[in-house]
Image 1 (cartoon, helix red, strand yellow):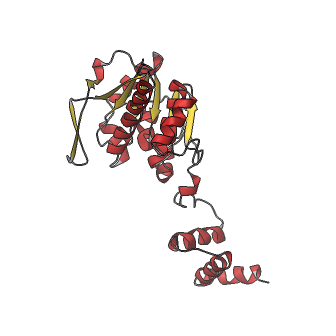
Image 2 (tube, one colour):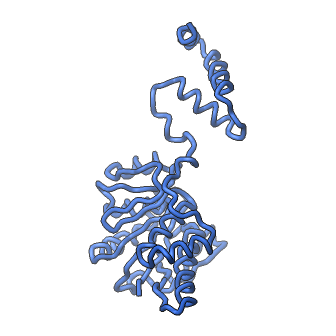
Image 3 (cartoon, rainbow, N blue to C red):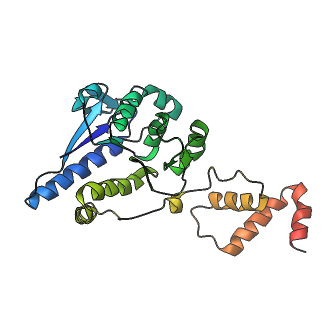
Length: 262
């Protein structure tokens, strides 16, 4: 039986705690319905017996305290919110425990911006990592030695896993189910939970935030126009016209547009 430890950090996002718990417990149910033994022992693991989340609106009652877990096969780090620098600091007591178990052969998976806590262990230095596209600049600032892969939903290197933003972590969870329980069970889980299987990229969901650090002014104008009209269906002609109108408001750019247009 595979032992899965879902950590309950301070400021954890409730859904990213409940969803992996539901999926792995659900796979156990599917196996038992097929006359097979359950595969996963799933535990919620924290620093205290009770962890209050969302300003006290929810409470999670952990199954085990951190130091009670002597051996585990997979550690899952949920997403967490708040000021991310402070949140990492508030959860620093998890770090040596994660490192210790990883060095003993435990695999570690972060969901969404749970990647910040995983990166704080130093285990990702020199390796690839996925996280939420919205926090990419901050991640690179805090962890310059980690190769953040913007568009990819799932990364896997040397027993370390990470996922893209928000609910794209379901793709990583299905990936882990396939690794431990096989393809057939993964397809079953994807159908029961109505999940798209084998999705590879979060790029279609990303806006231009964090992608404007370049000197191409017309491209920046195009990005700003799209962001300002994100609810509209934009034709290429409308985009070009919008860029021209915005740019002509800037006196120092009139000459450049005259050159572009002959």
